[in-house]
Amino acid sequence: MLVLTRKLNERIMIGDDIVITLIEVRGDNSVRIGIEAPCGVKIQREEIVISVAEANRSAPETGEGADDALTKLCGALPGATVSSASDEPARSSE
Image 1 (cartoon, rainbow, N blue to C red):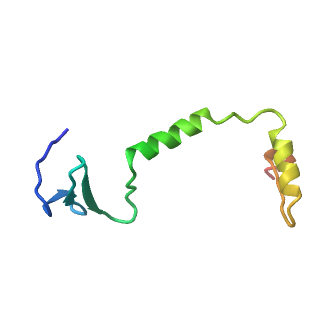
Image 2: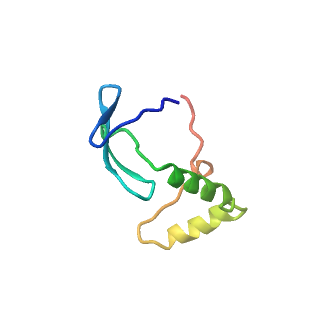
């Protein structure tokens, strides 16, 4: 891990296209930073990523009959269709 000391409004560059700027130092042991990065770069707070991963792990697994329940639900919507690989006719390679 690289540890740097920065003063207010000083920047850190990561590569050629990511810039981190120290915007504010607060008395409650927190800082505000600004991050400039290309649109395709994901920037997420670690605690949110961990929370979502834990929620996904604790979510109930799909039980038997889930496909039928989904088909019934989607079939109830106007114009909705649900198909699966088993519904498709076999194709020949002629």
